[in-house]
Amino acid sequence: MTVVIDRATGKRRGEREPRPGPARRLKNGFHKHWYAYAMIAPVVIVLGVLVLYPLAYGLYLTLTDATSLNTARTIGVNEIDATYRFIGLDNYADILWGPTSYDRFWSHFLWTIFWTAACVALHYGIGLGLALLLNQKLRGRTLYRMILVLPWAVPTFVTVFGWRFMLADSGIINSGLDFLHLPTPLWLEDTFWQRFAAIMVNTWCGVPFMMVSLLGGLQSIDASLYEASEMDGANAWQRFRYVTLPGLRSVSTTVVLLGVIWTFNQFTIIFLLFGNTAPDAQILVTWAYQLGFGQQPRDYAQSAAYGILLLSLLIVFTSFYRRWLNRNEQQLAI
Amino acid sequence: MSTTTVETSAADTERRPAGAPRTVRRRGDRSRAASFVSHAVLIGASLIALFPIAWLLFLSLGPDKDDYLHPGRIWRKMTFDNYAFVLKDTGFFDWLTSTLVVVLGTTLIGVVVAASTGYAVSRMRFPGYRKLMWVLLVTQMFPIAVLIVPMYQILSDLQLIDSYLGLILVNCTTIVPYCAWLMKGYFDTIPFEIDEAGRVDGLTPFGTFARLILPLAKPGLAVAAFYSFLTAFGEVAFASTFMLSDDNYTFAVGLQTFVSEHDAQRNLMAATAVLIAIPAAIFFYLVQKNLVTGLTAGGTKG
Image (cartoon, rainbow over all chains, first blue to last red):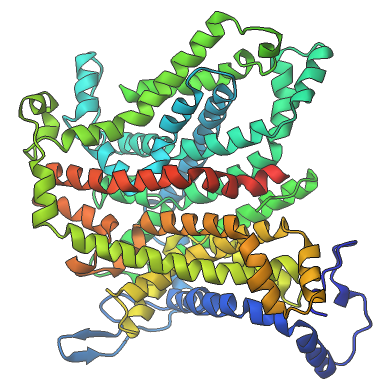
């Protein structure tokens, strides 16, 4: 019997039985589950080779002082062996509280937090607004919907260049602002405006996903709830507050979590919008990339250490989020 | 210009809920004003969504690389020269080949691996189940910065830098876990009775999977394939780092080559961008219905 899920309780069967000896257990387990293991073998191999091994190797690199000057490499016909040393946790200490750590880590950290919060709030707010509008019986609704998904339909690496042309010094946006006698900021050079532009472009790219997901959520809310609440004398705001929002809760928790993860990890937009020109507008991901690949010599060890720090931040956030959801008796859909 | 409009629509969002009652239309019409406001906001938002892409299209018709600074002049000298040049004298078709090889390879491996995993975690509880689910979940949120350095080292050891296989394998790290979750969600919706019936009729476990469940799961497989396809197509970081020679560039890297520090051939870049964007967008629109239902199914199911 290999299909061992117990649908009545959803519990694993193996848990309740008295535990036999380890060798016996292993044999039994293998006997009972060989089929399951055969099915997951491909993914275990893929993940092991492609994720866990590199992750372990990356962790090891963070404990060394590897750069592109002392790792093994081939120049012409000469093979040069790796000469980097094990230096323990020095990389982490240096990143977190070494000299100039504010400029190198904490300023990017704060900006990343702000970037994530602002972008997700804008995505969700605008996405929900548009979804509510599209959920009415409206002439041309399908057309609106098609046009509004366009930023999602076109690959980001294409649209970012469109924005770059628009935001350039005398591009269309500044010409337009100039025409209206408004100040014309240096979008791609001045730190504040770089950050502003990055948030703007990311908002433009990210709203369609939220809009479409929330629209799906809105359409799955039972219309009779609205009728009933209206019978009870709820006004439009109350219907929104007590019917729409609770109805959207499960889809919201999922898309917000996805939004946070995607925005926090957003590489394409900042990398392509600014290239190497904007050290202060780099979020942690792109900054780690710059350390590892955008400068000479390439600082592999520090870059990998940033990566590990980023991953820990995300894991901490996600586990708190899940715990908070569990406390509110909700399950995450993903 | 567009910034101010973005803010307007943000402000509207807060106002919207009160103005968009869902049931009023059951009792006859919404007020004309509400309908007007809805249309105005939607038209504004549509313009914002459309403009950057339309602008790219417009600039691609201007023959000079500085035309983006003087858009007015483009009207008088519109031409398709940029397109002709891109198709004839750049690596466009090399990039197309590499993109297709990488994207289709990633999709194939991703879907096959994800389907078997999804089925296993949907139907069976085995020791290590929770750990596997946890790994799948965590892997999905790996920032590229975590794996890119060790991957670079490993791939150079294996001489896989600048090869299609290397990039395909790296792309799979992000795609497989997500698709496995997706497929698990889909397999969960297929009744267990079907498996049981198959087993009773004498199919082996693998036979049940291959001959009963997979055909039923075609829509789910399609979503996973579309997702992999679009993700691999839009991938920038790994492709920019691991693909070194011009012939092997995918579109995401090739497009960047038009702007270097010394020279920016923006007219050619715009033309290339349009050539990439049109088929990509058409593909997206063809599959988006499946994609959207698939990606949010987990959420709406509650």
